[in-house]
Amino acid sequence: MTCYTGDFSGTLSPAAEIEKLEFFPYSRKAESSTVDHLILEDLKEKGWIS
Image (tube, rainbow, N blue to C red):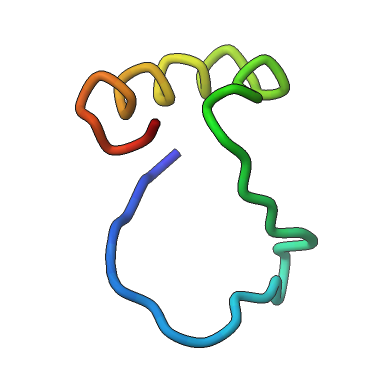
């Protein structure tokens, strides 16, 4: 997984091989994979997510 940051204006929508976009808070971490847990923990420790 690669995480990017940046400013965006407009509407995000899935395209090509991306079937669905979904944003969820840290509190839903249990719904993600083990690798995602490590990434989410790192992002939370850095203060990039809450």
